[in-house]
Length: 390
Image (cartoon, rainbow, N blue to C red; front, top):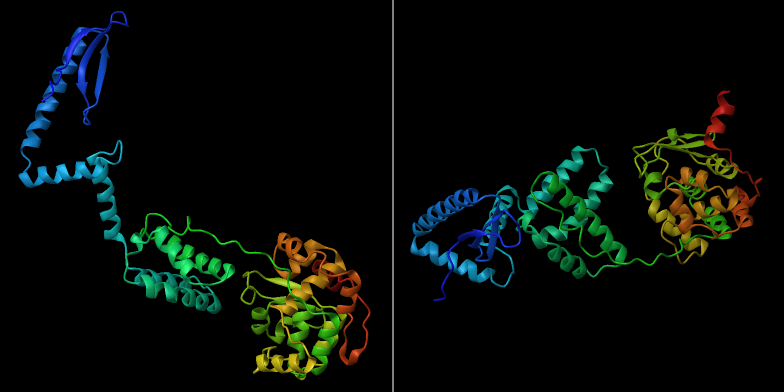
């Protein structure tokens, strides 16, 4: 066996009036030195150091054969990781065990998450979307503890869905919310979704209808469906907002459509001004009470599209058309964004220069019977209220 030097006290050769203890070793066996201002201080420190080593040595002798064998195996496992100590490994594993004691299976986490969202007053549509996107995740990981789900688990699962980039982002968004909830409840220490890969989505121009297509659609549509089409095309409400809209939110006298916080996708109230041609179409409605959207509206729209010869129907075609033509007509991003219920950045990114002002004028001049309305640059909502109540 190699000879191990014992600690010694001697004058420090490179510092005047200093004393050095040489031959010391730390817990990892690495040599180190200690410098003191006096020989007496060095002696006191070394005496305490030897006493401490003796106590720890006796404690080590009290280990059972199994404990010493276990420690030896642990040291061998850690040799590949420079600087890692047995204490580091023990603390890390103890933390893992403590987190697993507090965590819950993924199936239970999902149930708690959905219950919390319902109690928070989230919409039925939002809750339905959460349940739908979490269903497959629950089938894959329901029995696994939430704290044990890793970023790699989630990355592999999201890629295996074989969905388009945007759908994958939507699933990722829901999982992020789920594990944020787990972190708040201390079922997980960190959100494993944060570091998952985010797929790249190629932005496409919104699909829109032409003024002539809309005119044909309104001409052939069932009279009960025309208010739905007109509000979507000339006030720009989202499909879900129109489905929840009642006639009592439509003020024909003040020429305003009110989208309540309960109706709005963004959960914020907004007023949308009514154009001349929208007013004309609403006045032709067979009845103006209760829900605006009639029963079997979906089939009515399919029939109208077929009769109008519109083969391709872009996503949110009527709302996207309204935003496009409204922006082209007014050239006012702030006003259009406020009426649409989204921010100006989206407007500039997706809708700028998709249509000309002349096309906007044609869009807002479509009247019942094919007549042409006077094109109106709508007043801001505040101005309408001022003129009505001034």
